[in-house]
Image (cartoon, rainbow, N blue to C red; front, top):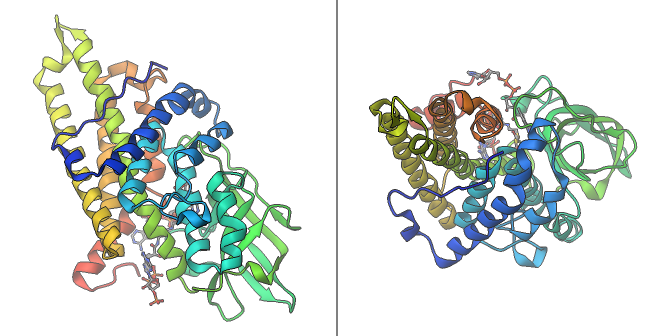
Length: 392
Ligand code: TGC
Ligand code: FAD
């Protein structure tokens, strides 16, 4: 792969909206991606393997629990810093950002928000340091967009719960020590349970043959009469709103992360367009290529403003789920379109692993599907503005 020459675009001087702390946090993440991710990521994506050696670095840049209070091992940062960290990581690779998103928003967040003090103290510091990795089990083979229909269930057996069922498409599953699993009790109410690797009847087979997110490990969670200690139930929230509340946090991170992937594609294509000569001119001098590049920077700038504004509202505690959905949907769509256009600017070279664009493009096919598909987020906006439910 070519050396990482990335220079971040900032067409509207949006840095003026950031504090010194935001810029420091971003710089640390950016430096780390250049040093520890860019040189190895193509090779790991090609061999479809998660680079476990990056876990320590992710913890050091504050990517595990950026907004979790420091007393639990988190970085105690605000939502803009969290977003900027996700942007920088996904600039390197969406799969690496997935690992961080899941650990922070889908494992640490529910334990922090819905767990008791004992659970927070037991799990959060180890998850923040990367000593333990976590995964989040909501999706099932027959219930993806409609998680309310889940069939994974648990029964109260007096001194423990007995868990049965299966989850599918679970990021980090093959190596996670801890799984936050959503399952129904005997009354059909959804609860979160912390399941640990090593519990009898719990297995995590890896999902192979992915053409997308190849540097992220994906797997299933199988529960065959797993005895879960009663103290592993998250006591402070139940119902579908509990897992969906975690998704708000992760979807917000993705809205920023997608900007990173788009920036990387744009920056690569811009540089290439000034170096690649055809018909005696740099291809960037042709209007057709300029149109692509000009539209890319316009869309990136709009996406940056959207993400920043949602971040401000999240800091104030006023962002609605529907507002977050709009940002996730818009920004991922923006990134996938930019990846496609940028790939064309590179001609044949664009399909090779010499450049990051094709990898981003393939990764974004997962990003536009997980955490709620492109369609589902549109329907969330539709419901919000009309008051009419078009899901069912
Ligand atoms: P609905 O009746 O609308 O809602 C049920 C209850 O949940 C509440 N709620 C929310 N709460 C917090 N945050 C949200 N975003 C919420 N959305 C809804 C709602 O108020 C209600 O509460 P209550 O108290 O009245 O019961 O539920 P529905 O069954 O009609 O479904 C709505 C729908 C389709 C929008 C929802 O199911 C959905 O978002 N589906 C998409 C599923 C999804 O996003 N799955 C993601 C799995 S995790 C993942 O992909 C990780 S990838 C990670 C990585 O690698 O980065
Ligand atoms: P389906 O729900 O079957 O949807 C298929 C198509 O139908 C989509 O186009 C969808 O938009 C459309 N559709 C569905 N319902 C409607 C409707 N009401 N109206 C109109 N169109 C509709 N899940 C986890 O729980 N944890 C994870 O860590 C995780 N990681 C993932 C990693 C990867 C790489 C991938 C690909 C997925 C991951 N997921 C995870 C699962 C992901 O959240 C689901 O794939 C996603 O929610 C969609 O579900 P589905 O794949 O079952 O598609």
